Length: 440
Image (cartoon, rainbow, N blue to C red; front, side, top):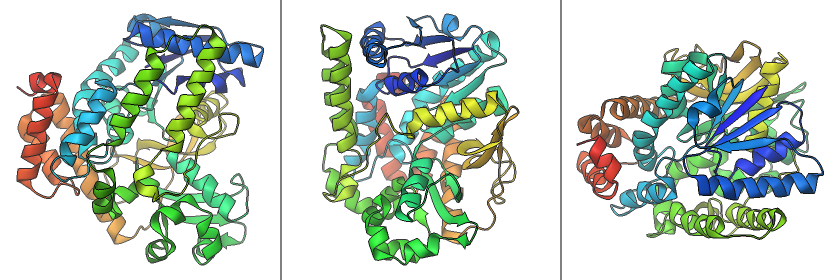
């Protein structure tokens, strides 16, 4: 079976290859990217991984998208239109107006989506032509919004993944002194905008036990991020990205004038510019860069405490989520995974086509979302508000409408006024020539 990775020169691709080295899912593996130099750097890292592992999954690289897609059974897509230079602008322009940019659920995510969705829809149309039976697994941010746009072309064969819900569930299980496998996690929301409202085993819901235990909450990343008092007030554990909503002003103050994207741009530019002599040296450089990236993840929210990082030799991470979906579909497992899929009736207050992030039963027919049940009023209000923003953003991206782009920004909960929205979009157009051309 053939796997095509679109965005194959991306920094996280070695995580996927490391997972493939431990599986036998694919015998044809193609990396596509628009930048051949980035492909070469990542190919060196993969060769280093194969040599270290003592075996290899054969792969090839190409800059021809149709060639990469032809006959694929699965297509993983993780692209960044505009690169990290674009992310720096996405986050930095709002910060210049005292507004948190946040490159996924914030106004920065809107700008990211405006230039990303047209490119992703083009990829989906090419998948429909060259690999009509393929499943498209989307990692591209903003993941929920992009997946909803992809489903307009591919329907349920487009599935969005994110590793943050499963990572949250593993951390909560560890704080409870349990393994995650026998537990059922009641998680709901949108991508990077979700809450864990119950953790069930044979004895019932164990989340109240966790929320009542100061020591256990202190061992939990989200307990340190949000504080025990706030988690008890919510009666739930939020996805870490909700820090940017609950503590927006504090985050703006902590970031100053240098957003996360600017740091990553400097760091990764050094990695891609390096010319290691051997694949082993390329792998060592990649690992060092990744370790530093993990160490500084969400540093603006952690107030000096150490954050979590993902060991590629341990289960977890977005590569494990992707391969778990592949395995569940290929073997018709009926496994439960938290994914970005069309709502159907999982969240009763949203329409059936709205892409949500909820537990799903995954098998040969794809991912079937499970009913969530009642949710607190404030979570419903925030989900409805952000979903409305996503819908307007998708329409703006596909039509090139300035009025809709400004409307999406103005409706966002983190943007304080219509005038602020106009100023932010004006800043985006000024600093992003491609966006100026698209919305001329």
